Amino acid sequence: MEDGFNFKNAYFLPRLQGGIPPWRLFSFQDVLKSEQERWSAYQSNYTKRTKRLKQRLEAYYKKYSYNSNSLVIRFGEYVYFEENYSIYRSRMEEADEEKIEVLLRMEDLPFHDFLIQRIRISPDHRYLGAGIRSVNSEESASIIVKLNTLPVIECIIPNVSSFEWATHDILFYTVQKNLQCHEVYLYDFTKKHSELVYTEQDARYFVDLYCTKDKRFLTINSNSKTTSEVWLVDCHHPFKPSVLVQQRTKGVIYHAEHRNNDLYILTTYGNPLGYKVF
Picture 1 (cartoon, rainbow, N blue to C red):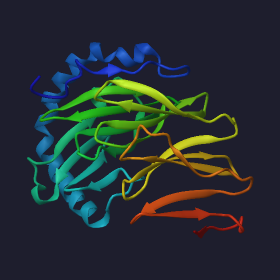
Picture 2: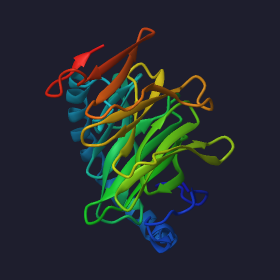
Picture 3: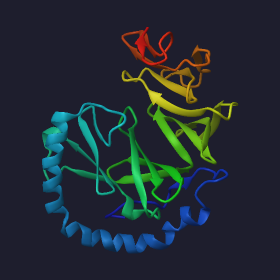
Picture 4: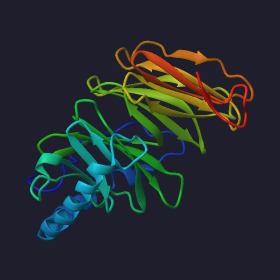
């Protein structure tokens, strides 16, 4: 396929209870042809659009470094950003109309009334992960795009709440069921294999993932309203068991960050109204 995106070889991880119904996942087979035609019409407006994007990109580059909570990410030599339900990429030194790449367009997918809420890039820039969520329900998914010469959707994982790359081809993600998030999975894109790596047994806690700013560790964060517990995953050895930082203590919330071989703990210990660093 010369224009647009290739979905023929995309696969879907097994649907879990409470996830996006199968007819919604696979309905793209019926709309793909019409989307290809629309892509041709879309190209006629592409020049004007990319000129405007270039101006925004130059402003973003000056403002942002890597920020995992932003939909504008400066990562390595690239800037990735979301604009009008699409994700783009550009090298700053080549920020002209022809060099801005369209990596993902929600218009090409059978997910209507979904917003892009998270962008994650694999360390080698080979994969892009986009987290989407419905504006009308709690339905969510992670779309994994392989960044070839033409971007190709590799897979769609339903029910994903948060996700982070550990290595070039290892993705950790959390699964949401009935508004609760208690499970963490590892997915190996080389072996096309998924496995459960963490389960939270206490229904009062909600699990999410975070990657330290130096990319050395992933943190599995299990939080209630008043108490938290953090487990570390070594990104150099993602298959090894995670390591507990500090067992949960009632009334104590803490977060972990890593830099220059030192682990920093931001905690409410000893001061429930504020945080201090250890």
